[in-house]
Length: 139
View 1 (cartoon, helix red, strand yellow):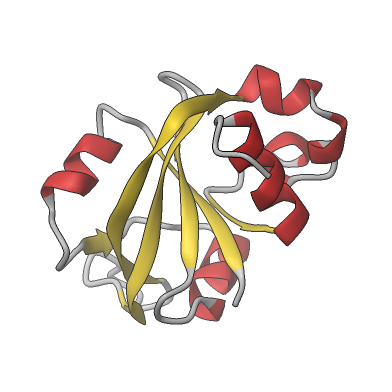
View 2 (cartoon, rainbow, N blue to C red):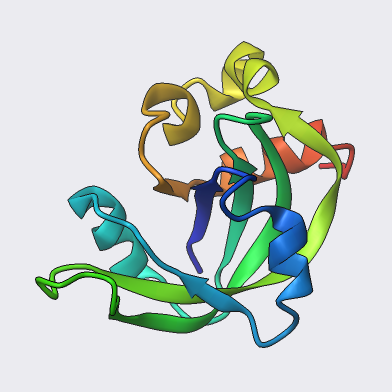
């Protein structure tokens, strides 16, 4: 199974809001970047993603899972883009900030570090394990 990272500004949609959405989850809508769209399209039910607070906080704060795969985004009048539904899995033991990620050699090629503007990103198994270790969740 693949792993991912999704980004949201906490003032728009926070991890707390994601947790409050419950097990049913909620739509991850509004993606308007073709690379991010392709990543959403590749997601499979049950795959997990880090939840990253962008602009405000700049830190990985939790884990979500895909509960519904790619479908059309009704907010896109041209019908080009779509969305998936995520449900919260858990909050990380401690957040992993962007500065720490950038200072960690094992994360040098991570999309969050190398292409920080992309809102939906793949995460390798090594990156996943490294972030969990940085969050105090062991290796």
